[in-house]
Length: 263
Ligand SMILES: [Zn+2]
Image (cartoon, rainbow, N blue to C red; front, side, top):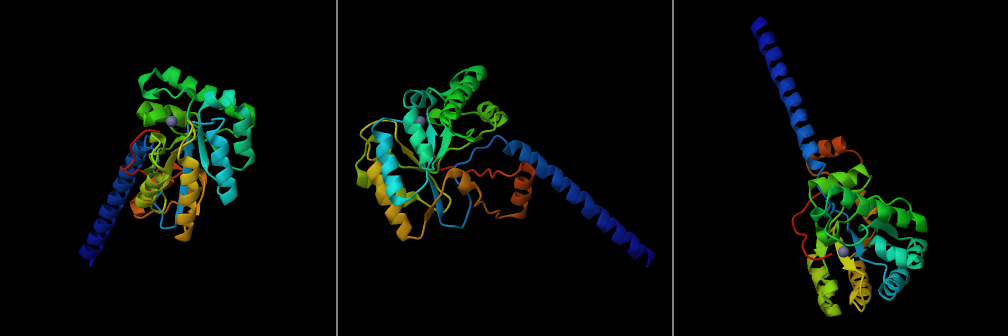
């Protein structure tokens, strides 16, 4: 009997030590995770986010805004500070239409190829311009050209930004035919996808493609949300992941491996 009690105590002790080790391991994983970026959100809900990069552009952006207004869809615009400085009225209209304004830094240079101080200045300069136009302080950041490293992501995080890439590259910036852009999106979209599109040059197949994609995906019961809203749809698949995300805080940080291409 005494032996049995001893053995039970031993088993509980082993279990407790195991649990503590597991917690420490998960915390270590969370520390590594803090440099990760979001490419999509893991969810079973049929929700996707349209993201529009490189604007505002005096012709391209109003066309994109019109189709989004007609379809009553809110998107996330990764605005270039330098362009917003020249066309503040278009960014103000984007805001007035209820879209999310996010940062694409100032001058579309590869931040990972400049000093950390210069990269930080790019984010800060852009933020001053966007908030000067009336936008809330942006919380999402997409590095120009998708060029980032751990130091850039950490620097952005220190300034209150979550780094967001994409899981579906529409290829619109290559000025492909509308049908091809639509097909690329439809072939690759999944629940939780972040779709990459552009409004930084003219003409682009983007406005027409957006209209068709919205109709197609709606007929499949998809809903369109901003990236910030999409993050709320994150569903933990494994208990270990739940712990990791709880450790990290409120923002889900999920990584896939499929993003590539220009942005
Ligand atoms: Zn870009």
